[in-house]
Image 1 (cartoon, rainbow, N blue to C red):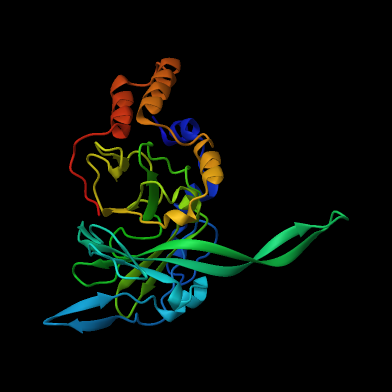
Image 2 (cartoon, helix red, strand yellow):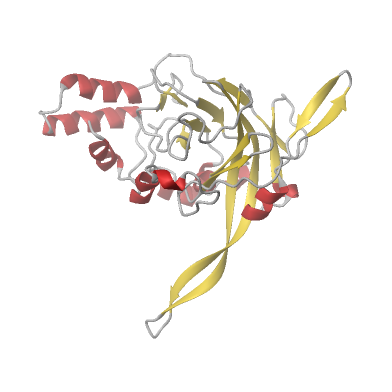
Length: 315
């Protein structure tokens, strides 16, 4: 099945997202590339990392560099840091594994943060003419750091560029679909002094389901399709069988108080959420209507969506 057929079946995919994945080569040298769903790279100042001594060892505490916080409107006290402890202290959230070593990189889930930014909104007045107005928008982000095992810079080193990094959110029991959760924006900021890549992923669209089991995957591809993501035996998001490249899956621990049941119901009925059984039925119907497609291709697509007992790389 080609990409257009799959996206048509799953409810469509924003054309801008696909176009962004094929940015011209001459944009790669730009330090600032910004637009909805287009990578933004900022290389300005060194990261601030603080180590606190605890007994004979040391504890790492994440701080978002000031220049990133100012860009996204994230005050330092809005960070809810991710920790790997059974009893998370106040102001933190606990996950089973906050760091994943993958394909020569280490991906670390650092924090969840709320940011408020001013945007320009185009409004139409009663006379039918357009005007611009500043609008404050609040977004919630999952923040990751990515470093190479050899300590070298991450972006534009080998095949890692703006079209080779992305993220996807998965709800337990539903086949991964890149159209399920709208990605308002996401940003890559690489600090040239420390060779740390900060990946800031907008997870605002997932908030209505905050009281349900969610996972988030950071992968080596801009569009997280079924070629790269699947479900495990418990119906949770995992990497697809045979996936090659950077890939890390983490629990997405959101405050259940953020859940909105009415908004969640509307989200789940938007035509992009399908159980494995529903998806298999849809696929069978699709291939019945398209008998020219090869049978082995059909089987591969269905198997990619079905839960398996394969061990996953996740947190």
